[in-house]
Length: 492
Image 1: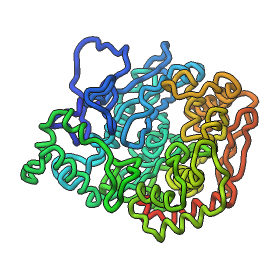
Image 2 (image 1 turned 135 degrees about the horizontal axis):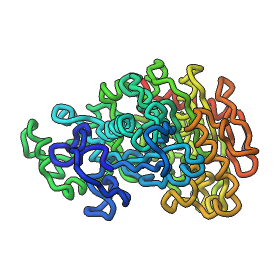
Image 3 (image 1 turned 180 degrees about the vertical axis):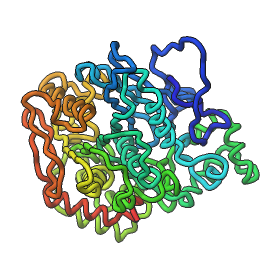
Image 4 (image 1 turned 90 degrees about the vertical axis):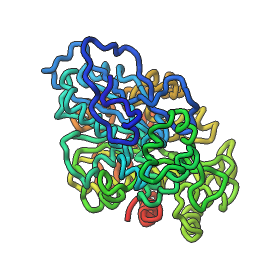
């Protein structure tokens, strides 16, 4: 179903608006196209600029009086693509005893969602991908009762960039509470560099040059871009080195949210440190080896580690990268199919970008609300042989069921790791229903204790899930990364 009007023509790079009302029955039997991501060709199967659609899974007997808890999933993809689009919510609805409503949706990404310039601000809107998400939450508030959902009991859940988005909605508009959600779940909060608008003018200038719109007067450049065929714009939707950086490698995430002064009045850590956030119960966590699928496998020297990190966090200086290398100086064991310094690059990037944002935000929430944390440590023989450990978002197959995430699940979830699936799924369902992972947890699974100043979290493992304390080394490294928050553009 549409939750917003097609963002075409004059609606490109503008905040989403209500769709036109349509009379009669609308077919809603097929999954909708997703939004164009970075590097995709045009046209592409199952992809379209007209992409602002929502999917709803609800018990067949639900009525507007059912008042069922609502689970809204925000997919990830680094804000440059939608890699978790259209995941099937049928199994979690079924395993909840038909006691929840599941929602997922699309939002604009890459060039289409995060093009930034003062010229965009002057004739459009910034961070329209995040505004799409916000529009969806308002759509849920207005319409979910029709599907049996309770508009006053909505839990937002995101993966990777979707988890980063969850954090950003908590601090949106300086922590203004629009009563759009009562709980938040984040799988691997993603905090890339999140620049200010002036720092992104070079991206806008590059798009103008590559489309020929630089020939137009400044006041007409947005009109020029809006007049172009989608194929022309998509041909410019690719990564280039950040200013002052060289090839290789390209930055992993070229288009990201910017600090626009409105939706994001400041950098995320700053807002959390200032207690400018919506205080709701949270469940946050990460995987043991968050950086393994992002670090270059051929990283063979300290200088290669430094180059990789600087190419993704462009304000890092040689002094900063020297500090990073000294922080990660303890030798790490070699990994199959990878060069000797790959483990260093993997751990450093994973902690800077995913693990430590999750732990640091948990700490900044203080005791104002219930906090639950986890480390996912389910090992798979194929992942081990590939040298990637327990990689980013490996828990997704257990949360939604291995049949429901578009072919991303490893075979071990059907064999020796099958036992972790009901444990994890029931914890998540319980949090959606009760804002507590324990109330409806799988029989026999351990009680999930809350996060406090001791730093205790659930270690999720097949056959031996248990509470554990974050070790001092990880705490110290996360404090180190937060101290670099200004140059990482995570805080000021």
